Length: 506
Image (cartoon, rainbow, N blue to C red; front, side, top):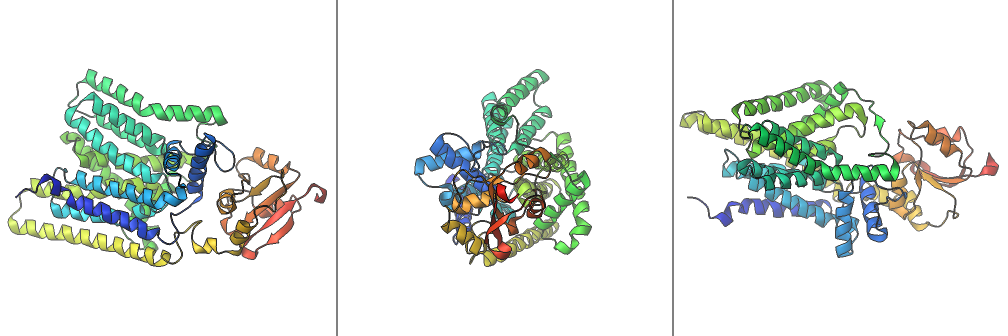
């Protein structure tokens, strides 16, 4: 007997409420998780509210990251008067709840689905360690992942109706995603790919639709890049060539897949690269099969297309441009497409292939058992994390290891020990700002010799050195001490120290 419409997504609503509660549990002790990126976003948001410009804590226009996420934070801050680090748990909880509800709503409309399958997927997404990590930190991925799912909803509406208004709306969501994370170009690519291989559009109409979609989808990114170029003469800030070849990036991709499949780390060296190839080839094979069948308008296949394009983009771009090593955070937008793509085919095959009742029952039980084991492993990993963090907070700049250290305590209590007009440098300038509100310069990067030369021309400066946060990509304390004599003003042992370089000492 069919359920009343208002009850069809009751399970999604329950999952959404539970998801919100889970985020509050993980952030109950020390608030939202804070990383260097979080501080960049929050400082730019504060600046937009107070000064009307997206300026980071070091006085430089925000160009390394797109403009929308800090603007989004600033809008909430302006309306509520509450700082992003304070409202972060509520905001992320609401976004995670919305994501879960949308996922349930979408799974309800899969080509083949059951109530049990829907519930299992909702639990798997809600307990995903990768997603829980994302939604317990002040990171732009929280909004980007939600936008990717909203895009799928709107683009499917277009594929069912072929109405231009839905295509333009999908293009607008793609445009917003590109100024949330530059990786939003993968959402643009997903739409273009689906349009290109759409058999139901005649050539002339297809060209018109691709042009319309591309113009709308690229518009905000172009404006963002033009702004960056005008302010800093760079499109996305200083970028370096990659130091990791394709095979190494593929290996790191495989280690993330192995982690998500709960494979023990001792096997990573052996299984990571083969696993990466298997997953990419399986996804490619599934996509080609669906293209041949001409059935690309389903939610499952839209998600499959996005997941594959996003994964390939991260691997390939990491091969040419240098940024953080491929990790669960970087690949987190793939979590939901992977879960959908690697499970939905079972129900589709189950529906299309004729089995006797006994075989169907066996297949159903085996699939359910595999999903339950997968979810149990997720819950075990989540429990371990909660046990580790419930008494000291999320790792980063809000946990007790950081907050209760002697160095941090000193910095918080002594904000005015620096003489006005003398520049301050640090190997972790975001940490100095977050801890005490000090605006200081980052030490120059090893890759830019002209910046290093400029640094050594400075005749008088302070140096806040965080030993435990030393960045191997920046010049280090030894590098400086080999060239200049530093006076140690305050010593905090293995935590760090505060130095001063005076011209008369050289």
